[in-house]
Image (cartoon, rainbow, N blue to C red):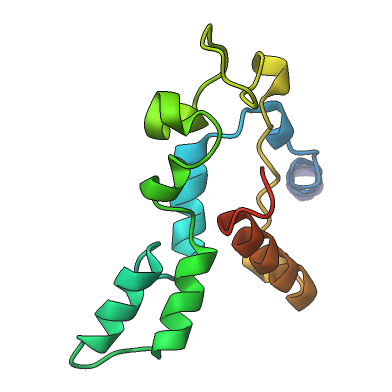
Length: 153
């Protein structure tokens, strides 16, 4: 009888663990934090720098480079934008790099959110191991297009 109870308890724990793993994520309820997002994207990009010129110079002047100049430049474009590019976005003239954190302002700035309801929510973070090659390529194209100013967040 004791072993049956132990087996039943073990099975119940396994079912609970599976239910928790399949539970819907609450990530969409949280605001998109630009700082944390940038750190994560920079780590995922495997870039030496988020400035293309700096990344390519580091390869050129390295005694034993671990990648070619073209790869370093491509990785830098996939990385989040540097502060000089962030200041070029909406509100950069008035708020510098703080423009990515502005929620409400009395300043007459077009394109900034009018309140919390207008702020983008965090996207679901999917581990690279669960992404298809097509998804990874599409994500890289989106990052580069955003970085080059063709697409806004």
